[in-house]
Length: 432
Ligand code: GDP
Ligand code: IMO
Ligand code: MG
Image (tube, rainbow, N blue to C red; front, side):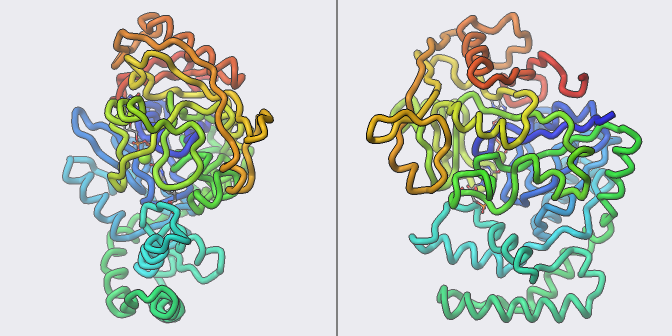
């Protein structure tokens, strides 16, 4: 029996995946990150204390659950070490609940330097998190990346690091007119920061393979969202990994039939995105400000204000198809409290007045379209922290039902506040 639940973002990230993974972890034995890196920022709460996780899976608060960082994740050793220390300072025994694959590729200082240099140039600006993610994935695909397990072979690691830094310094200095990266300093820092991490290197694929053979429950935790997927997203304004469910298999070393069980798509009750790129339903006026303030829509990793907009059914449908979504978790419904009328984008229209029902492919096509909305009444009463479906205002239930009708996917969890308890579980994805 397949008892895996993939929990991933349906929109442009920050849908509340961390909260939902934390909520669902009590039903699981393993929580696995399989792509992205410390560009992610997943918020969870330990009692009243807010914790933001970047590379460590969101199951880390539970004793007896093994959190796994699988091969598809990019590792910044410094950032991961700091994250471990931060969790320990909150009394969480993180190191003993965590294992990491030696096949993870490293994010090194030259990756961050290149990311920064590109973001300084108007022509190549994406609005990245400046964590070096793009350049690190590029090195992997160019077959010049370094893996965590390479550090066990110090001589080999030194030689390769020198070659790679020389290669990138040429570009940094001569093309980007930036400072070069110091090889010796990078080597020393990398070896120093790797000390703790190397102790928890394990064969993650093998652990997962055995877990699946024993039919144990596993959560695969996505980072970013489907619209930021390198292949399926709003390219080039995307991240550099496969954030959709296909990435689970590639990023964990487990065949798709084994690792992709139930796919729980986390959808925010409105839309947000950080960084540049198309956003047809973006709200620029006072309602946008209202939602940003109520939803505290500021980046968990960078602190940047998130752009805010109405929910977009076309994007969601695309996401359903490319992820094989089984059910939805609708988050932040409480943030819409007090909005007089709520809009749902049901199609686009081009400048010639032609209706469009699919997502454009070229970034140029986006300039030509505007959203067509269906309008629903809002609700006045606050549903913040509501834990019982029957207590939801009838307008909120109509909104949820309309999303289900338009997408053909059932909402099985509704989230009404940031803490684990602020949730309405209509149907548990582990009980199927
Ligand atoms: P992630 O990257 O998908 O894990 O999402 P983030 O943690 O970056 O952003 C989601 C933000 O919304 C966090 O501050 C959460 O604490 C908060 N949050 C999650 N679910 C809810 C909810 O249902 N209602 C409210 N008001 N806040 C929520
Ligand atoms: P979580 O997991 C929202 C966005 C960046 C930028 C683009 C590329 O918290 O949902 P990158 O640094 O990856 O090269 O940036 O992707 N981005 C995110 N947006 N949530 C995230 O993660 C994101 N991770 C990257 O803002 O637009
Ligand atoms: Mg986030």
